[in-house]
Amino acid sequence: DADVTQTPRNRITKTGKRIMLECSQTKGHDRMYWYRQDPGLGLRLIYYSFDVKDINKGEISDGYSVSRQAQAKFSLSLESAIPNQTALYFCATSDPPAGGRNEQFFGPGTRLTVL
Amino acid sequence: ELKVEQNPLFLSMQEGKNYTIYCNYSTTSDRLYWYRQDPGKSLESLFVLLSNGAVKQEGRLMASLDTKARLSTLHITAAVHDLSATYFCAVDKSAGNMLTFGGGTRLMVKP
Image (cartoon, rainbow over all chains, first blue to last red; front, side, top):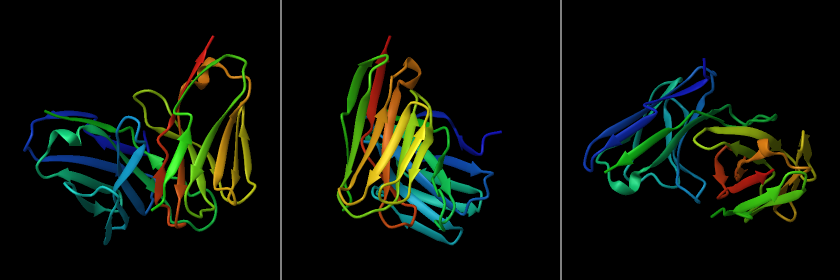
């Protein structure tokens, strides 16, 4: 089984609809992240959470909200979707940097299309 | 604001050739990551570079870090088709595991 899972994998919705993307992990990591990927722009950080009670805005948080339901679950919501939120969304996890590799591990991604 | 720039953005090369992808970043950092992404897939971690002068090698790929120049390179030796993918560098600007990604280099290796 995959260590980081995302649901749904693909979603098509209409402008104005509320959408929730879910992320679960079995790696036991404390830190979780949401990114979006647009062609030619790499990945940009939307929100991140260092533990259940710690949630922070990233570079492009406007129009998004998150919920950390448990150490293993981190959800991203689009309260009122708009077409320029069409993108590929990735969830990632990591451990706190205390020496060692500390790289982030990515889920398979959710392709969201807003019509 | 940390900026991370990769070049080239697109690279088409013949099998058997060598080439280098460059990753420049704008502020001090001593932690840099390289990832690979196949079309429609997630990101796979390739290298973690944790200090100035760090060099890591895996197969035909070798990554290095020069923190004084704020530059990392990903060198490809004797390219093969299986290396075709998009490669991203990412910089951890605060040792807090918050990554800023470059725009990616799309590599196409032709037979």
